[in-house]
Image 1 (cartoon, rainbow, N blue to C red):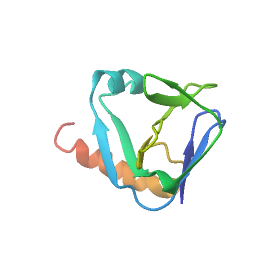
Image 2 (image 1 turned 90 degrees about the horizontal axis):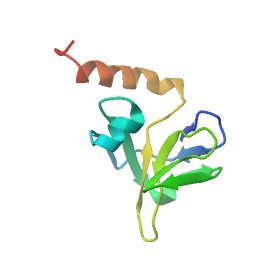
Image 3 (image 1 turned 90 degrees about the vertical axis):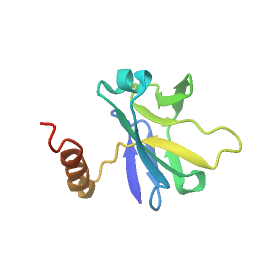
Length: 109
């Protein structure tokens, strides 16, 4: 099980299994909200995800109403996947993220 949540801890999520899809988005909204060249997200089946706390939303983007951390895209009725912004807390994934970033920028820097 992977866990993550917002900066203040008011919202937590737990996902089981591997994501169905992992991607990056370079749209203007994702660049603006992340303060970066892209945002990273992953999609899991809705039934593999548990959320505690209250999610606020604005124009289809879910975030913590207390600290403003972007967390996920709220699920509409009939959706089978939930899209979560990758904010995992387990140290065991730090090497995977570091390796992915290094590979992404190989030859650029």
